[in-house]
Length: 240
Image (cartoon, rainbow, N blue to C red; front, side, top):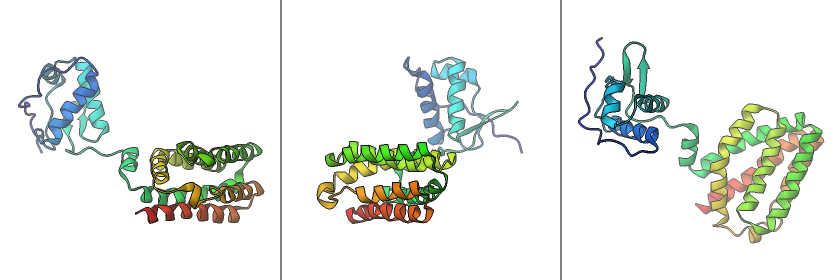
């Protein structure tokens, strides 16, 4: 099959502003692709032509094409050129998480953390236990405020439990959830009165989790983590 011939753009809109050139070039080319000016299978004009249209250097065009390839919109074929492979960019994982409903994110978080708590009870080190107790104390200190600082302290405590599982994939996965989790939890605080609904700010449940991990009791750690996370998930359900 003969590759589709490149078609000159109707107009790329004139020279770009001085900075940041790569981001602007990427966006201009992306707009042309998503608008259908270059269909799937179309070979893009060469770097020299694109550089002239955009009023930038070839190196800028090269970086822009690299970014578009990362988004799944184009693909370079050695000796043939750069071809359009899709008209809609592939969303990366952080982008999907930002768009997801917090309830959906939290359900997956619960799956991750329950298993992490079980593993932590088996693998924790004295350093892990010390970190968990320090994080628990910091959470207690931040609890009366019932604000974003309290959310950060709460997440930090959960992060020490995940870290104690000593599974880098779990640790990285939890880290991916953090921005969406923080946003959702801060939003939840704005809708409920934490001081009234939780007189101990969930302290007993979090202490029980730390104690179970410290004691090397995976069953209790798993059960405690699940109960605590499901209680928060229930608050999201009531909010809806």
